Image 1 (cartoon, helix red, strand yellow):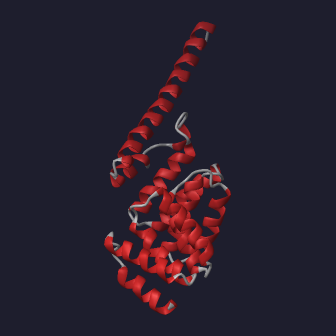
Image 2 (spheres, helix red, strand yellow; image 1 turned 120 degrees about the vertical axis):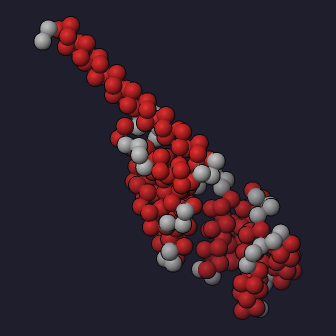
Length: 209
């Protein structure tokens, strides 16, 4: 094979590889948009057709994170964990993946592993993310540490004051801190905002009081 033919063949191979990478990146962006539109099942089907090794500009850790999130929304927590773990293996500092792993472990009934994930997430907490502080606050309530629970729940409240979950957990945390007036106020706010499990909150408050 002469030099010209070899050069042409090499150029063709490079172009094919580049197009493949562009196609993978384009597909990932397309399915990320579907994910952002809450079309989780369709987004998941699309993501799973992509060969992660062919991604060039679309971060592989984000690819695994989004797949894990799709499974989270579909309540398949075992698979959600598997993909969030892949994300953190590539990028240990991926804060939200650790948060979601904590939530998944909690839903699977493994509180200790959930706490470990939340504690790891704290090491990389470089952003204000209300769902994390809500989960963290709830975990500190379970651990019998109301001071820390209040700290993180109040931080969540400043970020997302319209979230009824925050006030429901604050009602419990304040009661544990023996602050009945604050507890009653948070309870009434959660109830007014339509928190769906007020019966469970009342049950926990009755045990504390």
